[in-house]
Image (tube, rainbow over all chains, first blue to last red; front, top):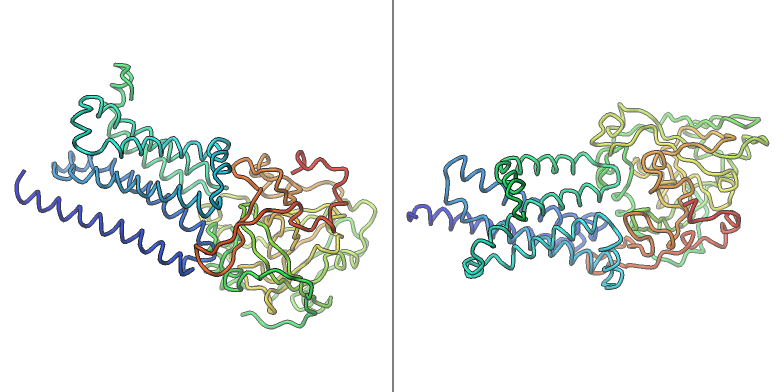
Length: 204
Length: 273
C-alpha cells in the first residue's frame, strides 16, 4: 500500500472519529442542558438508535463502493465504522435502560423478552457485539476461516435492526420502509455470496 | 396569535406544571406532522376564525357555535389535569374551558343518545398531514374520536379553549378541543368541528388503524400493557434536562378513579382496553 493511500486512510479515519465523537458529545451536552425539545429521553434514544443504523448501513456500503470505484483503501475504514455502529447501539440500549426504564433491571429483562420489536433489536445487538469483540487483528488471525463466517452474520443483523425500527413505530411506516429498502439494495450487492450460502449450506 | 382569557382559577392542584414551552412544543397532532416537534412549526398559519362547531344527531336542539361563542357561551374555568399519552409520557397541563356536559345539555339529547362522536376539521389545504401520507403518519382523516354518553357527561370531561391563561395555540388544538384526563391522550381530539350524538358506538381513528393496540375506551391502566410496551410507568415531561427526568408509576384511570371508576364497574377493562 502506497503512502498516498495510507494518508487517505488516516484522514478518513480521523474524520470518522471527529464526526461520531462530536455527535455523541453534542448529544449528551444538549440533553443535559434541556436543549433537545420537550422529551430529551425520547430524543437520545432515537438519536443513538439512528446513529447505530446509519453506521451499519455505511459499513455495508463500503465494500460495494471500494469494488465499484476500485478504491481498495476504503476497506481499511470499514471496521472503524462498524465499531461506531456498535458504540451507538450500546448507548441506545443504555439510554433505554437508564432513562426510559429508570434502571429497573427486572423490567429491562422482561421488556427484552416480551416486546417483539425489542427482541428483534436485541438479536441485532448480540450480533454487533460478537463482531465487535472479534474485530482485533489478532483475533481475526486466530479465528482463520471461522472469522469470515461469523462476520457474514452482519447481513442478518441489518435485517433484524431494520425490522426492529419498522415494528417500533406507531403508524409512520414510510421512513422505516425506506431503510428496509436500502438494506435490501445493500444485500442485493451480495446476492451471489448470499445465494452461495444457500447452495453450500454453510452457516451464514 | 394567542390572547388572554378570563377564567376562574384551579386551586386544587398540587403537582408541578409541565413548562408552557414544552406543552406547546411537544404535540401529537398528525394533521400537522407525525413528529412531535412538527405541529409547533407547521401549524402556525392555521386559521381558526371563523370557526363552526356543530352539535347534531340524537338531540332535540341541534346548535352551532361560532368562533366568538366558543369563548362566550359558558364561563371558563381552569382545570389542571394530568395528561397521559399512550406512548408512556405525561404532562401536567393547566387547561381553560367548560364542561362538555354543559354543551351537550344545551343541545337537549334524546333517549337514543348513547355515544358522542367528535371530528377534527378536514382541510387538506391548511393541514399538510391530510395532504401527504408521509407527513400525516399514514392515518385516515378526518380524525374521529368518541365517548359513551356517560363519559361525556362526567364533570371531568372538558371542552378546552385555552391553556396557560391564553387561547389555545394551533398545535394544541385551537380553537377548541376535548380533554378527557383519565384516558390516553389520543382520545382528547383537537380542533373539533363536529359533535354528534349517536345510538351506535362509532369507529374511531386509532382503533380502526390498529384495533389490537388501541381500544375504544383507552382508559389509562397500568395493568394492561400496550402490546409493544409496558404501561406500568410513565415519563413526566418536566424542565431540567436528561438527568433530571422523572419516571413515575402510572395510576389506574390516571389517578381520577374516584371520579370515574363507577362508570366501569360492569366493564372488563382487560377486554375493553
